[in-house]
Image 1 (cartoon, rainbow, N blue to C red):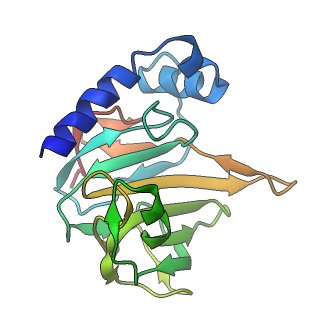
Image 2: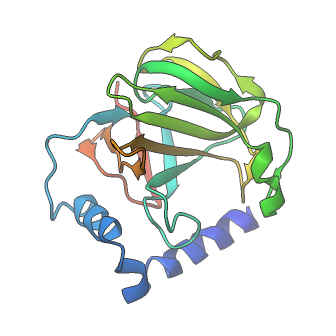
Length: 202
């Protein structure tokens, strides 16, 4: 619990930094989307990656200064063994399930268990830090939105048990492009904000 409290303090301090943090245009745009200054009605709306009726706290968001400086990712705090569901349907293209180590040392990175699902538009979603032997699908499986795909864990480079979720695609030149994601919540579609709890609506 102390580690999580310290993490939250660091996160709040990191999101109050100035010019260096905001130089990346994607960070600026995402922040405006989060606060509703820019209204987005066209991007895909993802389900929250856990069962309907369940709530979890989003503890770190897109391009935050702590460990997401260059990542349009979100972290959901979850007890180990929590059910992870597909935020969008697609085909399982990669996974790892045999990792057992986790903790705040960066040498733990290779031990993170994960599932990667490719969507119909060729974008991909990654679900990271899953429980050892907690992957419930196989490469080549077609999954539907809301389908149970894994159990959350604490493998890889982690400060506490959580799910790391990120969506990306590749442009025509094969360049990696991250996609900040809108989610369907109890208050309608929105870009999530850190240190808030979100319920997956029924």
